[in-house]
Image (cartoon, rainbow, N blue to C red; front, side):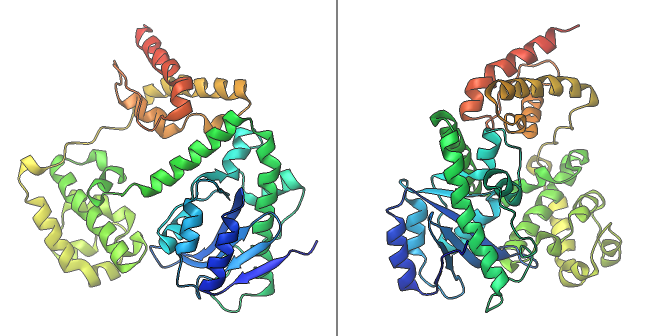
Length: 377
């Protein structure tokens, strides 16, 4: 079946079409972008499916994104996406806005127990019995003109995403539909939360092994790396490689020769930023103890794995009862945060990441399970 494809290459056409889309109950959204040597994704194409046609918006020729921003923010128009974390980054970078309400078909498939973390091609095959062509995902979306194959691939994505939504939506009860939108809102909220560069060190590998004085150095290294990656629009590992951060904070080299010997240290980093890094390490390593960050908690011991298994079982049982893919019930990080809040003897606190319907359905059961585990001889 031939797809009805329309191009939008100027501001006036975008404004006119966005006004039309504002009247619809939903639009399907997809993006193609490049992110090989940059921190931020570079938009190559925005695709919108309205249930009848595929609209291809050329971001290389559009200047005024306000009409699309207004569409994204319109609470009366559901924005349909699939596994959208990077698409959200593209849209935020282009328009300054994020879509709400957001319906992620990957999440919807999990709520219908079709599968967890299903790729788009697999979902289209399962729901529409259509086999999508492969091979264009990694192609150059900034080249002009785009090839016929690229255009066809992009248009099919937009059209089939709308069709998948129209198939999945009636299968969801109003309650589960609300849950999908709730999870979509959480995805948007995560992206809206400003990452404080000074807090990034907490997630660095092996950071818990460092002393508070070494953590002070790691904190500054991670913050500098994050700020520079954004400012230079380069991947973080092009500033300093991930595996170099911990040994830098632990050994705190004071000359370029020692810096060059750090594990996984790229010669380019030593050449471009070596002198600054030595100064940063010296300054951060000399701050007074009252400004050191507190030691980070150790990972949960191996003995805790049995309790984690019990907690996971609560989510699995609830998922089976509801007919939902068990993997979306309780995230591993959430359970670990819960256990760390009071291990080994309690009391335990439900973490902030356990929100909404999950907290209501399973929060008390998790706390009861931990109380029982504490009573076990």
